Amino acid sequence: MTSSVSVKDQNLTVLLGAVAAVTAATAATITYLWTKKREDDRHNAHIYREYEREKMIKAKTAQARLQHAEPPSGTLLKDVTIDKIFLWELEDLSKKYPSALIENVMHNKSLGARGIRSPVLRQKSSVGDGDSQKGHLSHDTPYNKLISNHECIIGDVIRKPNMHTHTVAYVRAGPRRLLHFDPKHVNAAIVTCGGLCPGLNNVIREITKTLHQLYAIGGEVYGIQGGYRGFWDPAPYLQPLLLTPEMVDNIHHEGGTVLGSSRGGFDLDKILDFLQKKKINQLYVIGGDGTHRGAFRLHEGCMERGLNVAVAGIPKTIDNDVDYIDQSFGFQSAVEAAQVAIRSAKTEAVCNLPNGVGIVKLMGRSAGFIAAHATMASSDVDLCLIPEVPVVLEGPNGCLPHLRKRVQQQGYAVIVVAEGAGEEVLGTSAETDASGNKKLPPIGEFMKKAVTDYFAKFDEVATVKYIDPSYTVRSVPANAADSLYCMQLAQNACHGAMAGFTGFSVGLCNNKMVWLPIPELVATSPRSMNARGRTWERVLALTRQPNTVENEKEPEKGAAQVAKV
Image 1 (cartoon, rainbow, N blue to C red):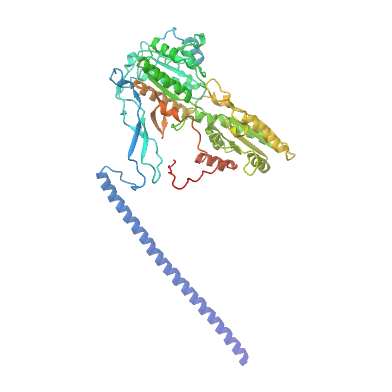
Image 2 (cartoon, rainbow, N blue to C red):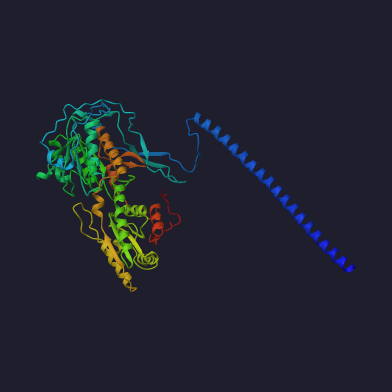
C-alpha cells in the first residue's frame, strides 16, 4: 500500500513539474511576444516619424526651390553634371541670300476632287498634262507654338557618375516664325532612291500635302521618277510628275513608291541643270546614307553655282542603320511583316518530320536590328544570327549543337538569320552593286546545308525548310506607327526647308523631332547594333543560344578610360 501511494506521489510530482514547466514556457513565450511586439511598435513608430519628417523636409525644400526656379523634387547629383552643350548647327540660306522674312502661319488650303489612286497617278499626272488648283479655299491659322533656332535636344541623355561633362545637342525641328522662301514662288522636287521600304508613299504624300495645303505654295511639286536618274534620263517612263494633294491622296495605302526608285544614276551637273531649268528652290531627297551623301553633294553644288536651293533629306533604311536617329521609318512595319514568315517557318518545322527546322532570312547588311527585333517580337525563334555577332558553327559555343539540342527537346527549331551574318565563316565578297554596297554571301542557303550535314553526322535526318521573305517585307504598306512617323518627318522636312535650312536631314532623336547636318549623320553610318547591349541580351534570354561575343579586354593600367553609354 505504501509503495502504491509513493508511485502516485511521484507521478503527481512529475505531472505538477510538467505543468509548471509548460506554464513557465508559456509565460516566457507570452513575455517574449509582448516584448517583441512592443519593440516592433516602437521601431515602426520611429520609421513613420522619420518618414513624416522626410516628407516635411521635402515639402519645405520644394517651396524653397520653387522660389529659385528649380525643380521642386529630386536629388541633386554632384557626380553627374553637364556644363557644356555643343549644338550641331545647320547651313542657313538666309545668311547668304536675301530672305523673304514672311510671317509663318498655317494656310490650311482645301482639297479639290479626291480619289485618284497611284496607277492613275502614273498615267495622268506627268509634266505637261496640267493641273489647275484654282478655286481652292484656305483659311489662315496661327501656330500654337513656333520653335526658336536655339531650342535643342540633348544628345547624350544617359548620364553616368564621373562621365564627361559635355554633350552635343541637335536643333529641334518645327515651324519657325519667319520664312526664308516666299511660298508664292516655291517650286519643289521629291526623289526616292535606293531599295524599297514601307512608308515611302506616306512621305511623298505628306511632303506634297504640306507644301500645297499648309504652306499654299504658288509653284509646283515635281515627283522625280526612278531615283537620281530621273532628273536627266530622257526615257518616257522617267519623266517628272506634277504632284498635287488630290493625286497623292490615297497612295499611302500602297506599298513601294509611286515615283519608282533605283540605285546609282547620280550626275551632279545634270541634276543641277534640272533644278535651274525648273526653278526649283526646295529639293527633298528620301534615301539611306549613300543617298544622303549624294544630297550633300547637291547642296554643295548649289552653293558653288549660287543657287538659293534648300536640300532636305529624309533618312530611309529598312535596316535601321542610319546613325543618331532612334529608328528609321518603315522599320516597325518590316518587323511586323517578318512575323508572318517566322510563323510560317515554325509551322513548317513543327509539321514536317523528322527533326523539322525552319530558316528565315531577313534584311540586315551590316546591322541585325530587324532580325533581333523580329526574334523578340515572335518569341518562337531558337537561334538568331546577326552581322555584329560571330557565327560559331561547332564546339562548346557552337550554334549547331544548340540547335540539335532544341530539336531533341521540342521536336523542331526555328532560325532567323540576317543577310549580312556569317562573313567570318563564308568570307567577304569583293563585288559591289550599283550603290557601291558589297554583295553578300548566301548565308541562308549555307545554314540550310550546314544544319542538314550536322544532323547527318549523328545518322539523323533534318527536314529543313528555307524562307526568304525579303521583298515581301520591303513592299508592304506602312503600319499605323510608321504612318504617323512619316507624317512627322515629312512635315518637319518642309518646315526646315521653308525656314531656309539646307544640307540637313530630319529624324527622331531621343523621342523628339530634330534636324541633323548631313555630314554628321553620314559620318558614322551605317551603324551597327551593340553586341554587348541590352537588345542582344534579350535575344539570348529568349533563344538560350550560346553567346559568342568576345569579352571586352580590360584597359591597361594608366590608360585613359572613356565612359561608354
